[in-house]
Image (cartoon, rainbow, N blue to C red; front, side):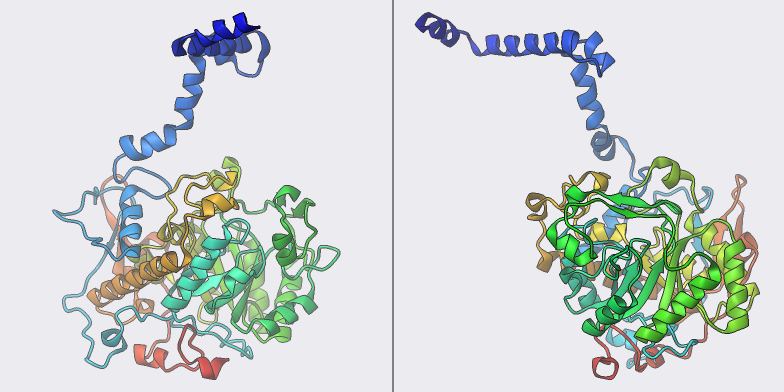
Length: 524
């Protein structure tokens, strides 16, 4: 035995390396059958898989140029990071974009910018920019709501995002006077730090789920009663990442906390089907919306990615005939978002936001319904110039998801679905979450929102308007073909936006239904 130990102790370090590599080679050739490359090229074949695994990071940092990456390029991410940190987000020496490329957008500025007086709300607060419409006003809901910010946090669930990420977002929207959409995972304690909340649910009915997996009106009423900061309710029909597809939440991911919040059993798989149990057609959906609005007093809207329009036309006809229907419609882009999805869905199912929204708005405009609905856009609109285009097309508010995530530290690692998010934003790993300081990150989310609103206000004034709701479609031009020709939006999408009733910014500030930190005593 001593001889063996002496022999082993005399083996140099490089000898142990050779022994290790030999064992790997034996395993590759004689035992593993899964990977052809490592079988045919033992040891060195592993180098190929390792290089492949770090390929996205290598391309992101060393190969791709500033405008090349998707879904968000380096310039876009850099603007969000700098804005969130209150750093210099300017560019020098002119744009590095090819301004003649297909779909490049131009905002037509006025000869004389809009001039504000010394007592104007935007003189006092350069970031004051509420929604020009009141959600629920047309249908005379008991508790109408005017969002105090045109940019808000889109639907992202606790469970999809980490507890500290959700807490950071909620504290941030309170500072920025925005609202926070819960996502379909239910209302958690991390959504409850004082900001306005839009409660969102899908086919799983998490948070308002009955024992049979259907919808519970009693739980909905109790939820709204106990949480007066819930200002509106959103019913998800579909989402941009995977419209028409349900999902399974594995039992291993359902902790006791998540089970309590979602109203499910801990440790058991939970199915979210593609269809709702509470309704099966458009008339039933309208009745469902009205029942919730009557029971809670809150405005109720729907969220969907857009494809076929036949059922949307049916909805419009019912709204015309009955005077009932959703108070707001959130249009999600088919570009996909924070939700994990098969590439076949993310790449091909449902229309990109600009086409989907244009088709839907055109339908509701021709039916004479565009004034009574608050339209919310969600699909890479978290940049002031893109927001100006969206307002020109008919949007009233913007929801951002991935942009909000980046403001609190997301680095676009694109591993949200693996539970290994390196920034701690989209993971349930306690270790990875420890890198998030909610106090600091909430300030960064708020600063990003404030910078966004300030720059959008400045663009609006440059175009000669006081509020972005006043943008017309012919204020925006877009390159439409390979001959570098630009067309106004109304000529591109073949409709004209319905003018939004607007008096003044001061009128919006004086509104009793204004959310955020305004008029709390009147609306509580």
